[in-house]
Amino acid sequence: MILRIMNRGMSREAYEAMRAELDIDRKHPLGLIMHGASEEDGVIQVAQIWESEEYARRFDEDILLPALEAHGLPLKADVRVFQLQHLVTP
Image (cartoon, rainbow, N blue to C red; front, top):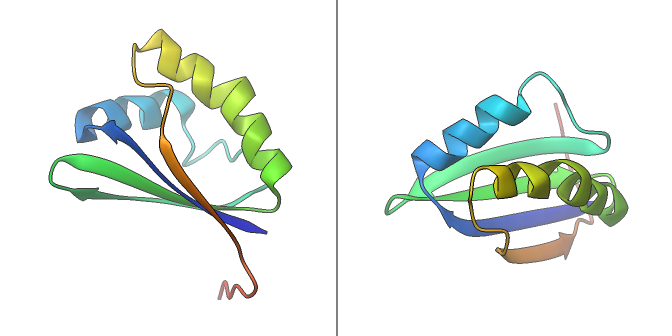
């Protein structure tokens, strides 16, 4: 299980457009356990928990990157990946 924290320098408006297109609230990508976003100084940061790094990579390559490219949004991101040792989901 991995935790990814990402910052693409994306505005709230861009994030909301991507969220609406991907419909991640209802169409859960395979292997995604949790997705959350926060805004600081007008920039969105995303935290995700995936069953494996492979699921996260597949989502990026097959779904996320083509959508970002279609909207002219940054493909590069500051991504930090952590191996989770413990997770509680009540």
